[in-house]
Length: 426
Image (cartoon, rainbow, N blue to C red; front, side, top):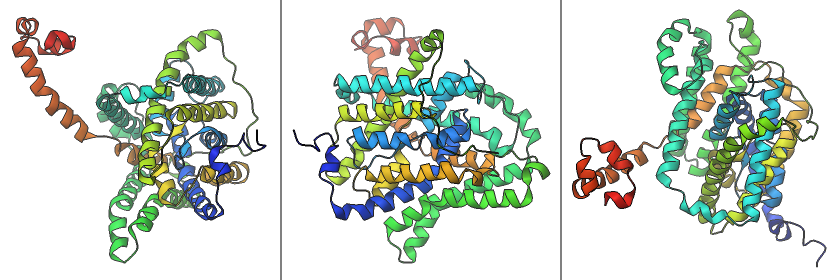
């Protein structure tokens, strides 16, 4: 056995000319990851430093065990919302117990994913229905958006289901904070324009499509810098009562295993399984898509182990469940990443941020973080899949209900008819 056989395959075949692309991609993804990590920690009900912690060790762990050359691992919107939904009934958001439960959820999810990878269960990803996953993601994105309105507009909107939030919204709108609403809505407009209009404008000026797309994706960091500077100069937390991030502890977290009661483990088992499933599906979908563009292949089993290792690393370093993110992975690919070395560069930069630059986020308004989340998640709403699925299943519904003797006796209740097993319908 060779001395270097323990190294990941990409390390053994690393080429010197890859270094420039990996350094550039790691830097660009880090600039994008900073506001996202803060925003997704807020979405998960955790203090902002948890998002930064979840953006250091998990990147290193995936680089060692994952199979994709372009996947960017870290906090993502859907998994963050699922974390909040799982933990809200168990502890107060932001409390020490809540943080410990989030770490435990990441640990359990990591163990489930790694075990599935070792058992070579990656093939199960090919049996997941696109329609079900698309519907779940779209519904989650809408729920995330409604939940962020309280930060975006500075209103006392209670949490809960989408229907309960919609019912409480009219009365809550009477307490809109005009400064928070202006900053939040203004940030949304800037982010949407940067995503749609800026690339076209830069293209007309002769800038390549790749570079113009990169500029548009870095706009969130620029918005964060401008909003934070304005907030600090005008002390809007005191003069306008706008909610801000506040003090973010500096320094790398101590590595420790979370400890919770046995009863809590039972409560976290199902959420951990669901987060593992959704995280793996999102990760492997993105990784497979980028691998096809690059003429490469990924290993679903290695992806299970890689994402599992990333979650375990997040758990022992004070983070919460993570997975591969679509937007960051696309940026990573477009910025010229040749290997997971770009993720290692991002981890180093994020560790520097955690150690020395957390004070810069004190005056960052929550309204701007909410705008970042809303713009990011609304792109996940797939209306086309919903329409296509409805058009596909509606004729089948009619045919089954007209031909099946069971369905013909229940024609007055088509919903029940469609719920019957397929062999009874057709």
